[in-house]
Length: 414
Image (cartoon, rainbow, N blue to C red; front, top):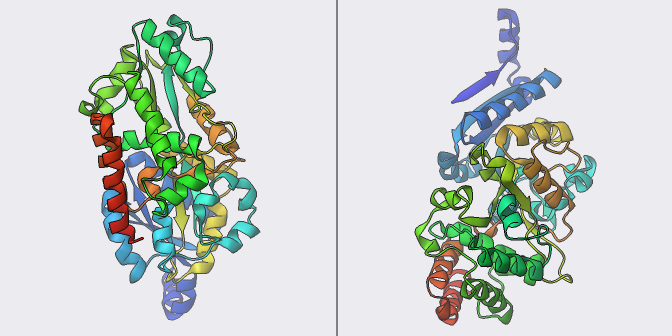
């Protein structure tokens, strides 16, 4: 469906416009926007309306496409007749098109518009081969949700900041008859969150990205170290029983009903918290395992791009400069239930969102995009299946890693 923002033209002016086709094209900005839900569509429309008000000489045509259909149609647009602006994702999903020459180099925009300072934490995920191809918009934080009242009941003094403190908290919760951690293993991507954080904390983001790019064998000792740390948690019964039987919707009641104390998840779930439980829910950064490893976080980034074959790149660059300001970044984040990627945007009002914003905007070790966004889809799917096999039977760890290594060699041919 298309929405046009047009100034009214008299019959004479309309005739002039058609006669000067080149000039009309130069003043028309086209955009294809993926959205999920009415609130996302509304905030994007609000943004384009505000842009047109600030630049009344630029006509704006926006096509809104449901997110799932958008994923299917995007490759066709980029290779044939793309719009001037698209929205997409950072990391491997951006790099996939950048390496094929389908996205405009935005490095000059980063330098000209002070994005290097305002978007420092998301610059790495916006970069392919030393150049920036993304204009970040919003992201959401990952971390440990927890029940404050259950921590108090178990005698846990504060939020665990280090791995020994986390393990001690788990021990106290078990002693109080409370399952330490809920996990929705039926949704394999929730397991990927555990792999990401253990790898980021043990090996760091530079190694993590090499692994995501298929450059490291799964039989590498550093990968096994991650799974060994994970196995210790399983052996110590840190997680709920039969975690592979629960998806995210089914596992959240463990927290709501006080049966489990913690869950590693993204801040996007906060909207679904029952009103009577919200005051008891807290959120803290995934604990530090090795203080020598620069602290990195999972923060999947949504982004704007200019296709290489766009017709009106001049106005597209003008729109990006407008959309990447602190105020617009905050507006988009609020409307999309996310966090502003712009570090100069005002902090969110909600306590959990505020904590997530601080964690992401202050991280020094980089922002990972999440397992299945940092990696090619085929390898990510096989990797997450391997995680489910591992959780089902941790004693098969070496077999799982050998299988993943065979898959890596087949996919990356390295």
